Image (cartoon, rainbow over all chains, first blue to last red; front, side):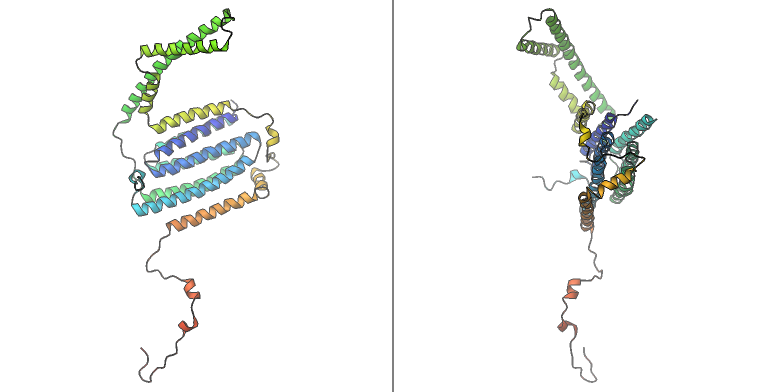
Length: 102
Length: 283
């Protein structure tokens, strides 16, 4: 069967919903949250590259390049925040943190 | 052949993404994430974006995922503890609620469809009877209400109640995820290609044998989109400074230079003339 654009879009949609589900699970484990964010960004990248290939436009791949850059930067900062948080609190279970609740 | 490759890589991609989410051990999650990136890179190559595929491997796998692994090992994240309700019981209640919902919905759907079919047959034989639109709509509404009342008579639970019962057995996140996935799959199968979109192509992909993908991207990045490129570099710089600043610790007892103090030195502080008595020296 000929692989069309729709196939890639469905794969991207499934990956996105899995990342979203992991985002909800990340309330318990913060590492899961960051990994689910990476999955979300990966699904968007796949979507963009699929469209770029099927519409013959290179701008899609260019945009993916920039998304990759920003994702790497955001992962680095997120992990740094996590490390400092763990250093100060001794735990990264987000449900134990309730100082800001009114 | 290409179809086989696509199906193989996309199945492995989705399976390892699911394993990232559902894995109890954080280290396993990160390793499955790395495998996900590998499969995504393979899909990128199938689409002809080989520069991005290699970039994914170098940047995402080689840097970001390794960073994840460092942090997971360093923070010593504990594996998830067992839940109170065993999974089998949860599955059973979920399945029962789903079948209840299915039964109510099936009765409703059957009677609605029968009524609509009857309406259609009436319209075919006597077209003059249902000429006005309001007549059609009121009859349709009456059919739907009647079938709903009938299904309600058979099963005492309302359709909305059954939906809520089913939704209660699932965690809210899974429910939302499933709804979103269904929406997006509808979207994926229902989109239409604009017929005149060839004129909107901003950067046409040159043929692969003439210009390799890397070169074609390079021709774009350094000419038309150079400001964005430099901006991305700035973002990386800011991220680097931010990460260092966040995690930097001041250690005690380390000899440091204080440049401003060194520069602010005055001549009067450097040299002092002291008259030393002979034989005694200075203290």
